[in-house]
Picture 1: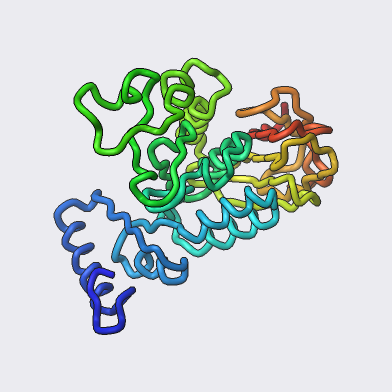
Picture 2: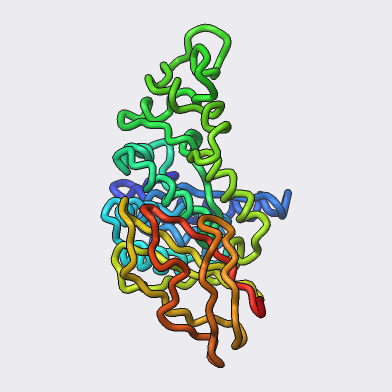
Amino acid sequence: HLIEDGNEQANTPETHAYLKEFYQLVKSINPQAMLVGEVWDSSFAAVKYVKDQEMDMGFGFDLSTGLIKGLNQADAKRLGNSISFETNMYPDNSLATFLTNHDMNRVSNQLLGDEGQMKNAAVLLLTLKGVPFVYYGEEIGMTGSKPDEQIRTPMQWSAADRAGFTTGGKAWMGVNSDYEKRNVELQSSDAGSLLNLYRALVQLRQKTTALLVGDYQWIDTGSSQVYAAVREYEGQAILVVLNLTDGPLSDYAIDLDLNQPAGSYSANALLGESKLAGLTLDANGAAQDYRPLEELPAYARLIIELRAGE
């Protein structure tokens, strides 16, 4: 909607031409500068801005929708298909992944306050291909729904007056009523909190190359309620497994097809249960019916590094 032409308003040729010229100007001044675009449209329309060198990254709105719907429906296949389709559309490192933004009902509201699914959403976001963005407050489960002002309330830092947001006068928008029970200070001291999960995931992503730049492969587990995927890069294989329900599940199986040599592999927990079953890959890098746990606890979240010869 940058340059409108009569009845034509979105994605006009004039808008594309301007952004291409602007992109070239920015890069001539600083080649390391990064342009991120909020093209609230289908991925087919949004990806054109990236492929035609009008911006470096575009926000994946279709992916955001797919993630939230897949979690609400506890539908692993919907999640896997959406993630695979959307991430494959974009050139490497050009997809800006996110759950919600300043114009959308917050994750907590869309997932109906389900803490387990909010944690699953965090794991998905921070183990996918792309460059993840976290909207402020998402990491502590802040609530907010339309109108937009209610999605942009003060950050809840503590249980202090005005949620620790300001020591001055009245803020433009009042703080959420739950700030005394949901804030950064309180969750920082809780090892199992949503905030500390986000912190652990960010740190894990930063030091795990496969999660940063590896290939993505969704795995059909035979259960619509168990999500599994592998990220691989230069010999490193990371397996992600999620129970999308609030009850234990044992009826699932993971068939692996990896770019790894044959042999025995240990399953080293980077997140979640520590005592996991190992596996053996055949000459084709495959293994059938693998289950790291015989029974996945409610909302189990596993991030596993498969290590050869251990």
